[in-house]
Image (cartoon, rainbow, N blue to C red; front, side, top):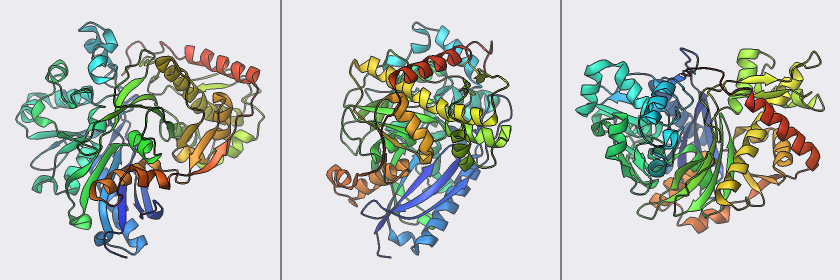
Length: 507
């Protein structure tokens, strides 16, 4: 393998980590993926072992390199995409986490979110003008505060002294991969920083007022950097390789879909479901339940922004059907089971396992399966589970149209593991009433991270080179009549109403 002929992408997701090696044409040369444990100590709590994540990432890198017949010398750069809001706090000297990572889906901070919203004008939108985010269990800030509080006064004192460090998973990985306690680089890119509820969207800097409001010490925060620059060099299996790209997974997918200009929209179907609409070099603030986020920043260039709709449960619902309900033995079986019935039999499945995210933002909601009769079978439940993802995406599209007072683009670009499900993609086109288009590489979060890293080191010269590699592989056209579409959407809204107010004190 020629030196510096590949770019590696580390795609660290909610349920698994993977390493994918790309060549100059953007084609996959080798890939390896490993799952990690989902730790659920209480209802609504979701944790990961940060050390296990690092171990699995390193194993994926080693195996992908071995399968490609290459070593670190073949790598021009490494890019990272990550699960964004998931929060890690660790000891600077020992390099050990002080607590399991608190995952973005976790709802233990619901009461803290309510108190924070009530403590100032604007309620849950109190900080939206500065951060683009509502106050919720989703962002990192309250997770940091919870970890510090759980450790008592000594832990907080260590954080104030800078002896404890905070990072989203990208920050944790970069620190570990560049040496850890022996000189690791403590950074976070602007896309991930924009998900903490601690960064000002306009200045792209940590905001002292926000830090004070949530009681997070500035000394534990990483340096905010762009999404495409050399942060440091790898050690071990990545010895001497520049770590040069870093984006939150959904922003990485937007970048990997070549959505570089205002108006482009994509939706990623993974553990959750995330729809992003590029709004250019200005943040557009939502009044319809969406998030305003940084889309990317390349080197010293201006930041670009996006509107985002986030759905907590999509692919993880299929895992739940397999692992908790036991109605399928493998996730691949769900499509055939759903197709075995002509419709959902009036069953609606609203998977508000972590409350409802955009556009509702209701942490008091919990999942329901409604419309059950003795006619309903496991096939109807499986079909309703797949339909749930499509209906949630349709809600996000409606909110985006309302915020922009303009129609969505004529087609929706899609990516992620669930787009292999032909039934879901056709149903999505039907419910949206517009074509759905998939790229040749489904895992565009990894591709976007590779693009960012490759641009930083000159592996690809510019965005035009990336545009030239962008091509679609699959297209689904809407085929449902308007009356059937309207009836399905109305039935979905009935189901959503029944989830609300289920718990008095969520968390």
